Image 1 (cartoon, rainbow, N blue to C red):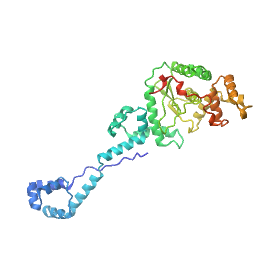
Image 2 (cartoon, rainbow, N blue to C red):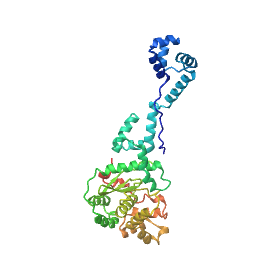
Image 3 (cartoon, one colour):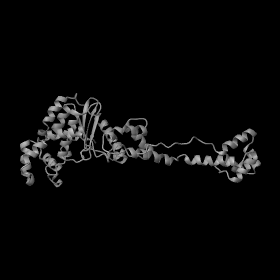
Image 4 (cartoon, rainbow, N blue to C red):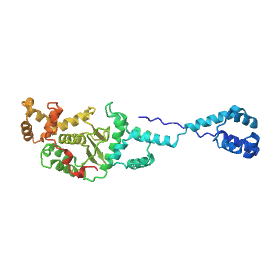
Length: 371
């Protein structure tokens, strides 16, 4: 991501400025200079306004009139023309600004999601982004410093574009979180709910019952789709004194929903602190570190992954839907979670991933969906 700022030279004066100095010294008018140089007043006026290039013949005449060398006037004019060429046009300024904005934010996706309005020109876009970021100026050098923690905590494949777009998504998640009001966070209550998570997977309307319980315990939850190139599954962070869980519905499957919830609760209970203020998770490309490994292990424990394998180990080579359903009933866990575990272990083909997996967004109350 380019961060080098182009340096612009100071304003230069053209030869017209210095000709005027000589005229003032001699108290000459334009008419008098035109007569002395044998030129029309119109031609002299164009030279004085630097609209007319100084030719070799003109430079020779100026040299005779003002007792200088022709090279002096040619150099003044050439340097002025070079400076003019270095000053960006309005079109170039707009293009540079637009490039900086598009480089750091997925503008089209933000418009498609109604995070910012459509724009007629780049300055309208810039004003919309000032509102989005709640700032008076977008400092791109400072922006690039802000994404450094994201880069430091991810694998090498997590490049600056992904980090910048993820930073944008995280900011939007913070904005959304600010609109929720929940009670004081009850950590002990969350631990108890976490231990009972599997039972909610099989309850009628269990997803919404679980989410309502989260809110009662002071945990904010909402669904916020990921932005292009971020590939996020979920996130956990604090907004003021309340933990926040965000689900992106990247895969929209029941097993993906419950694993994301279990993983993010693990981060809240075990990992969120002054050093680790947020977790932005991509389960497909996540760099495996100690904290993510522990969160995965805790999620697997709450979703009974080991019990699933133990129950089905004698039938693993010739599984039937009846076996899956019996296992689900025995362990009090949704059959989609069993399918998800077996697919992850490559015991089952991904062709089976839709078994028992309804569209999870159809099961989540619309009050949790960010519009």
